[in-house]
Image (tube, rainbow, N blue to C red; front, side, top):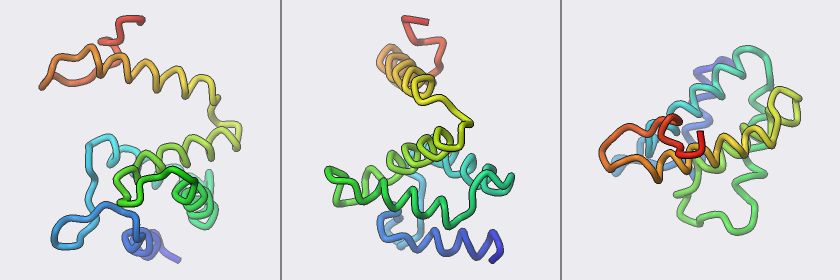
Length: 123
């Protein structure tokens, strides 16, 4: 199956955020970056689309997830993190620490300014 066919199947996911016209959309720039990282890692042979789909599906069906799909890309990032940790390519505690750092940076960044890790007051 080609990458285009895989992406086409992915765009049919029922939980993927869609525009009013029904086209898949990224709710925020970080979601597009997470998508691009996933495609890149797949192209590098880190995982197959079947493996990716299984991990993402498991994350999407966990109890407590938003029924309206608004946390779709949060699930996406969690699934990607889990896959990278299970492959030994990332450390779970390092990912968690980085998430916390980004959160602190976001909270410390004035409205309308770009969020940068340098804005984390604990860095």
